[in-house]
Image (tube, rainbow, N blue to C red; front, top):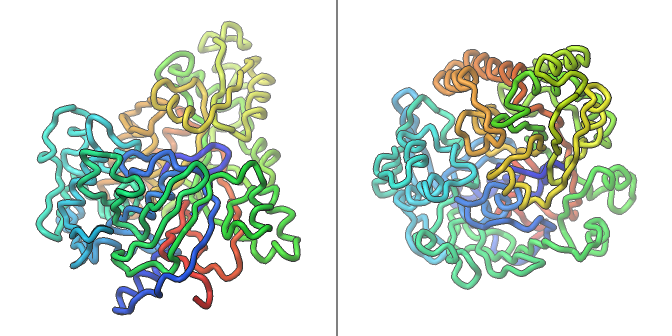
Length: 526
């Protein structure tokens, strides 16, 4: 989330490491004076506006420039950020955030609860809702405002009073402070409302640990925000290198021109035995899932029998185990390991080719005869060939394949989804709903397959309304059982990510949310 990621594996670029900074602030100590710089290899963001971004590459950058009220540390413990504290009231139906006294934007302008309300309303702007607008659906009036152009923003349950923000919710949602840790909720200056170019270098004003000093075709240069709430970051300048001229990131790292570089599993397989690079290899946890989806709004996949046939025809675990190159683990549900409350039940469609052929014939396509020409579209799905081979062998259906650049692929998903597509999803926050309701609930901005199931929606609502952990887990299991039965999506794999990290670079560990909090980085001894 933040967030969509490429199907080839969500890039575990950068992990929340806010504990060090918040610890300094809580003890009343100043952070170290900025004295150094670091060079990090990173995919170029599609946007640096929190309310517009919806992909992992963009959120990894916006998280540095615009702070939210809360953040998760390296142990996935929720910590205060712009909010010093919060109260959950009325049985989880009301949350009051208390902002820090003296909080300010990078230009010195005081930051108040009114700035938070304005920033969050942009996420559900009816004229241009965020790809992750559904994260606010539990707020009173938010969904209605988003879906009705010309609605009244005053009807949304966000109310500012100085440094206090009151959020009224339609159902108990005690996890709302966790939800707003997402980079989508970064607080932006008032200028961006009327002029989105206000986030460009030279005019940039932010609320995060860094400000954007330069943006070229090959690099984003970030400089420390002297007015950051936790004190100036220890590293004065961060170079986010987006283009290494076709070279291998491993070679560029080895030459000393990068200090942190995400790498592929193939490289990791030999680097771990290299005398020089091996000690600098890091396993980067990622709370993510790669999954396949169907366009359920049009033939042939509007027929649940066809989706069930495809689900039963493919040996999903086998193709991942054989083709994952040791970096992918076959998925058993949409919820990846590491998410609290995750069930151990296997929610994959059962592999049953005979039943698949029977279902397909029942739907009017015996032996695949008369089945329309369709393509499997992605921005580089690693298992596409094996999936297509299983479908051809078991159902007699030839499926084409099309690979698009990421920006074009996401645009296609949002406007005219392909019959079959594959995508990766990284947690916005570590909760089951981020992989279920946010992706599949009726009307969700991330429900690219346009699936709708009242039974699924009801189960998600039950989970959100309960405060009993056993009841919550049972409701999410019920929702996953509906997904398993009706096959709007199929979970494929969970990934292991790798990176090379320079010895002496502190704070570059991971917590699975797909980005490093750059303000938590420091060089040993500096």
